[in-house]
Length: 282
Ligand SMILES: O=C(O)CCC(=O)C(=O)O
Image (tube, rainbow, N blue to C red; front, side, top):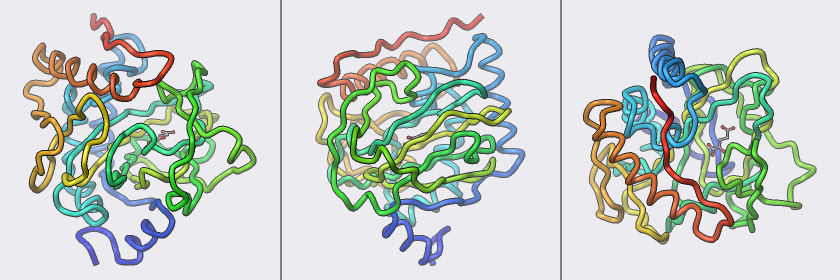
């Protein structure tokens, strides 16, 4: 028995490359996070989007709380050990009636980590069932090695650069990782997964937190940054400082600097790059 997961759950993650559902947040915690996100959206007049939806823990209190949440970290520790860093996060929002999707891909394609031991905790802040466009996975595919990816320029692809595996899995439907609000799924960085549009009446919101064991090496350029959230730093990444006041000028400046380097890394070799420019807050 681990801190949070049973031996059988750890074995399932190792064998299949994913695990769900793991209950981590109370209803009050879900409501508080969602309320803060939606208050920000009300101020900007639009759905939380890039760049604020990326590395949000450098800008927002709700995200700072989630990346350090003991229930999430205990489960992650059972999978990757006690020295844990946050390498990246993305708030994945699909509003109802929008055509947004994500094609079959492996996260490890664009994270440049050796060994590829990163795990994504996808924390549901709404129901995320099949109709709402939950993730679908190919069980065991994390053992198949790294597939070639091409960029999908589709404007409705939620992955900004749109890296995807074409041809190989077109006829596959995959196993759904349906979640209720407050539950999370965990998936291995080489697991092949995708998600389809939200056909449900409500919003689908999930916070994808990419955790890495602090001992993995960085093999990307420019050098990657990461934030220690438990245990000891092994000095392999540019250390990110914890945010002071949420949405302050300092927080934005820090976020812009780290996101600029992050995108340069993600977009190396891509036809298009992404600037870091923020929503107008009125
Ligand atoms: O939120 C989604 O639908 C997909 C998220 C995803 O691809 C990921 O967290 O790795």
